[in-house]
Length: 240
Image (cartoon, rainbow, N blue to C red; front, side, top):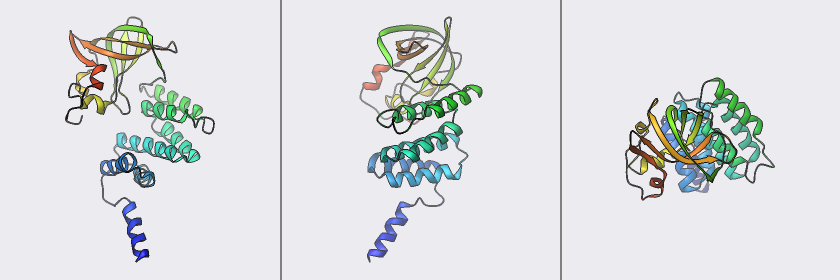
C-alpha cells in the first residue's frame, strides 16, 4: 500500500503529457505561489523550458520562474545557472533579467554574482533593438515632468515600461505590473500607443540616469494612468 501511495504521489508530481504550455505554466505558478510546493513548480517549469515551446513569452516566463524558484529553495548554483540561461536566451526580455538580477543581488549576492550575465544580456538586447531596462531606485526629492512621444512599449511582467522621446533625449519610464494595472479596471495595454504624445509626471532615478517612475500619464488632456490606482481596490477585468 505504501509503495502504491508513493507511486501515486510521484505520478501526480509529474506534468501530464499533452498539456499546453500555458496550462503547465499556470500549474507551476499555482504550485509555487499558492501551494508553496517549490519542487512541483520546478518540475513544471523545467518541462516547459526543456521542450523549447514556440510561445516565446511563455518560455521566457518559465525560465524566469525556474531560476526564481531555485533561488527560493536556496539552490544558489542551479539558480545562477538558470539565470545565465535567461540572460543568454531571453536577453530581449530585459525586465525579467533585471528583476531576477535584483532578487539575486540581495542576501544571495555574496554567493551568486550575476553581473557578467546581466551586462551580456543588456548588450545583446541593445544590439537587437530591444528596450533595455535599467536597474534603478527612485528619489522622491527629484520630481520631473516629461513631454514627448512613446517610442517603445514593454508590456511584460513583472513591470511595464515605456521609452519616451523628449527634447532632452530618451527616457525609460516605469509604470506598474501589467496584471495589477489591468486589475484596476482602468488601464489596458491599448491605452499606450507607439507615437502617442504624452505628458508624464513622476520622479527620477537616484543614479542620475534618464529613468523615471511614472505617477501619472496623460494624453490630449486625458488621464490614462495614475499610480494611485494601483493601490485602489482591485476589480475584475478581462485579461490583456
